[in-house]
Length: 98
Image 1 (tube, rainbow, N blue to C red):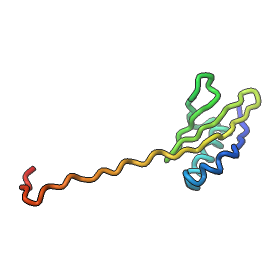
Image 2: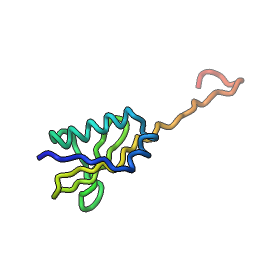
Image 3: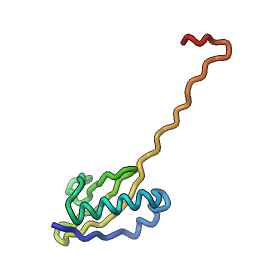
Image 4: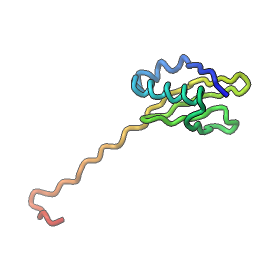
């Protein structure tokens, strides 16, 4: 089974946040899934019409229309950045053995 892919107009706002590299990898992952069935799509909602495809650096949300064999790309969401952790500094008069 092959799917047709439709891109939502709301994705223009995601491009500014996610960046072109993530969009390219997301587009390639969706095309591979639609054309060859490669990769995994995980259902997000109860009726399994919205699926999540994980890509390096983010996630792609697609709506599957099973009767029309259509995947509509809804959102491309980058992963949250890792938190910045500052090292604890010793007091100036503290010994180095701790």
